[in-house]
Amino acid sequence: MTTGPQHTLCRPVSAQGIGLFTGETVSLTLLPAPAGHGIVFERVDLPGSLRIAAVCDSVRATPLCTVLGAGDVRVQTVEHLLAALRAYDLDNVLIQMTGSEVPIFDGSSKAFISLIEQAGVQEMEEEIETLSLKEPLYWSEGNVHLIALPANEYKISYTLHYPHCPVIGSQFYSFSVTKDRFVQEIAPCRTFSIYEEIAPMIEKGLIKGGCLDSAVLVKEGVIANPEGLRFQDEMARHKVLDLIGDCSLLPKFVAHIVAVCSGHTSNHQFGKKFLNYVKGEC
Image: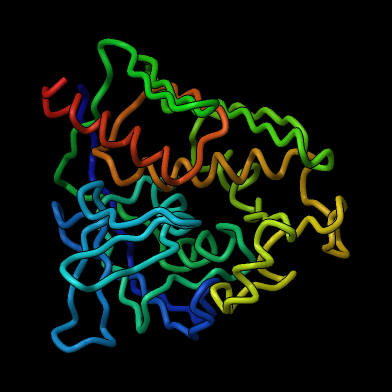
């Protein structure tokens, strides 16, 4: 275990966008917060401006995104924003929202990086602990595997396997989580879907804000976006982005996370095991 300074934003910053699933237009404001505050969402559209802490115990569902809740209040699609905050080592931020879903923007973390850069990051006098592992942790179910190995840095190695979709195929990406590398290699990578798999959801009105400007779409075996991919392995890189966002709900740590075919549900199952380890329960 090591310690280092906590960080927050220098000034408030805001943006507006559309939720991928709800189609709602939502205003999002990131504000500085005091030491020990943590990352907290605030639904300012509701009476009492109810707050939800961005921690593992707040996870309520993981359908095609990460949903956090407190009581009956929910915020969803939080992972791209949380990944950006983690990459900038931000510990204390209040996130005010006028709706239930974080805007999807272009399906990546680029918009959130822009907001953080506008706000600026300041070091605080108070310190925070960074945990390290003494032994490997494993979680597996079917062909999905997650392993946390002891390490002196935060690193993620991800293997993606879509044998039924040759345009995606098998991809691998390994990445040491630093701000500069995140901004250059991970933040631009967009969420992706196979049209034939999500068509029933579209027909039921469950993806009201999706379009080619907010995701990579594979349709009839080809990339439907006119501009194509931003990286040849953009899908694997985006899975790394999602994993960083989901793991940001855990106490700050260093480890080498090796993931095979994981998604939000498995990420959070693994997170529960990691949290139990931290609490000394396993």
